[in-house]
Length: 200
Image (tube, rainbow, N blue to C red; front, side, top):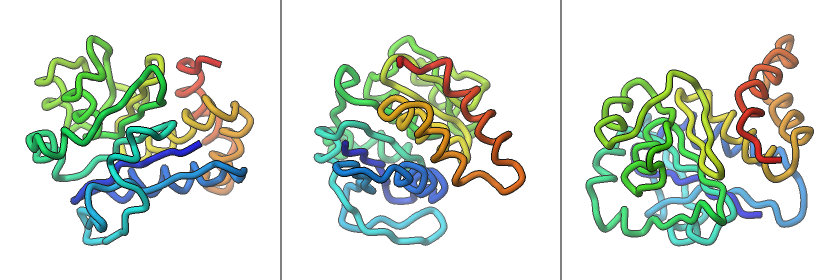
């Protein structure tokens, strides 16, 4: 199982790295989560530089893809060379997008007439792309999920784990990251948002 987290220049650390941390709670042979970038290194909106662990081309063959967000997403969707490197198959892959990553899915034609979630700043651009934006943190239709708000990245990670490893595994991963004294409430709330959209 290879999960790629698409992470571009100007990325939001909370989106990419929270998902990375939650997904890596699964410890089993063959489970691999990588920061996937268009270049060898990318620098976040707050000046944090990370090295790519996989390429955009690797994402086309991954089992699951999370498209992260950042401050340069509108430039990304306006760059044909970059968008041309993105090719996903929702029939075969789990595909998820966080905040402005939803705009990338919209521009790739992966949302169609299905509503989606995004952050408040990106909302008008996603609507401009012809997608209805929901006032909720998480939504999924089939193998495509979207989330709005940085901390909703844990919902995307939990959804991918639940879809592939089951609810018990997702609950355990979310329980680990939840604040002490609020763990049960945190997990219950996350699963309340995720469970209606599971196919298992």
